[in-house]
Amino acid sequence: MTERLQAERLRPSARIKPTAQLQYRNYQSERPDDSGRQQAQLASALSEINPKIQTYLTREQERDDNTQLAAGSLAFTENGRKSWADAVKEGLVDEGENPFYRRGYLKQELRLKGLDYAQSLNEAYMQSPARSSDDPEALRGFMHEFNQSFFEEQMQGYDPELINESLMPRMQAAEETLFGTHRNNRNEDYKAQREANTAAEISKSIGVLAADGQDSPEAISQIVSGIMLDAEADGMLPSKVNELVATSVMQLALSSGNEDYLDALDNIQAGNHSLADRPVVQERVQRIRDQFQREREAAEAARRAAAKEAQREAKAQQFGQVLAGLLENPQMDLSPLMRQMAENGDYDEVAKLHQLRSAVSNNLEAVYAEDPFTVSSMFNDVYTGNLEPQDILSAVATKDISQSTAQTLYNFLNRTQGSNQFQSIRRDPLVTTAFSNMEKAIVREENGMADATSVQVYTYQRHRLFTYAQELLEKNGGVKDEDFYTAIEAKAAYIIGEVAKGQAENYVPDYTSAEDAINPAVQRRAEVEERQRTQDINLVSPEIPLGAKEFFLSDNSPNAAENFLAAFPDADIDELLKIKGN
Image 1 (cartoon, rainbow, N blue to C red):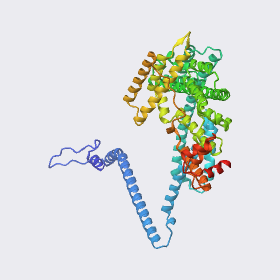
Image 2: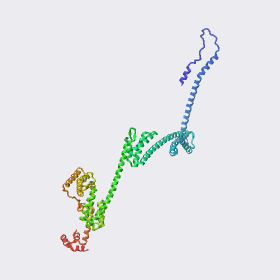
Image 3: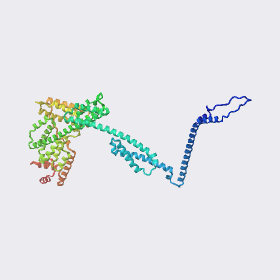
Image 4: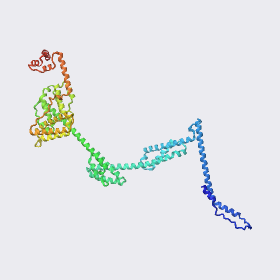
């Protein structure tokens, strides 16, 4: 700028012109008096340059003033801070008494209050009715009341200049943010309410169809398609409409338990395809169909379990009646009941009736004289699966059943109910297939009904194949490999061939003589009782051999003494006679 002013000074004035005339060297004319005109020319030239000079001088003066003011302020501040710092170090004043520091503290405190203001404003807004109001005056009124309360409670005693400098910018920013938040909240509320209304319209429309019995997938798709068009016309995005409709229909299907509602999605158009063609919808629909399938399977399983339990109770009652009848008449005719069971496919029950008759006829008649009710109930529990080993031990301990009865019950329990291997074979689908093939080959029908004789043959051979499978599984260490299944199939084919030739023997499992089935706990109890009996005998006479007392007491024939002496020639017969007499 200085260079420009210097250049202006050097530029000649256009108004100042020379007036001198050429004079001869030796001649000089009289000079006219033109002082007034020259002064006028100078004044005219100065009148043009003076504004520029004045502007320059004013600007230079302001620059000098500002420079001196800044330098003076800086010197004052530095000197003040230095002097206050020295005073604080010397302990003459407290740090907080420094006016520069105190002003900074107040500004910082006001900035913090600005942050508190923003947080408190948002919290109060969320609780205020103004949040859900569409009236702008409601929001302004809320903010006015909040600001008035805030200043009354928080701003007393602060310098207004500091408030304007440190607090007001943050308050204004918080208010602008709140206005934006309010607009967004109202927009989101509108969207949510519109979506809720659309979902309710779909639900109620389908409910009306259902009340009239017209809720077919075609009718549902037609009415829902109309609702979709209205929603899109009201400004809802097509993608949102598609999502909302699919979700509403699927939720209705779940809540009503009507899986057919899902078929309506096949007929609802979403662009060039149906809603059901969208991958996301396909995945969700499949999950819902899987859930319906699981519920159906669970309901069917519950129904089968209830039916099985009812059948078990009925059979338990039936077997109890049969057992009581056999005890009263061992020759009771069971063929009608067996035929009915065979017609129902209850081949296991037919086999149990055979076993029950055999048990009663062969070795249980004498036992029932002890306690017919207890023994009858326990044998019935074997067939129904309700007998536990501890029940047998308890009955032995209370003298309700004898040791021989306990052994028979254990044999029935172990062989009829089976072990884990028994259940593993019984539930194996490949083994079940072998049984089914054998049944189809053996059981004949006459007049649409299963022949009782062939059913009985199959029952025997089924026990035969099952026993073979158990033995084979035990040999394999519980492993069911390919060789195991091959052997089962071969055995089934062999049995079928024998039956066809009339060479198959009736196979009945021996539940009464298999000593390997005796429970170890019962065996140990028998040993304890045997030792106790031996001790009782030895207290009477140490000369009586082990087992002699039982042999002698069990022989009620007239030749009991001779039989005893033949078996125990060294025993003291007189002592035994004393025992028997007691």
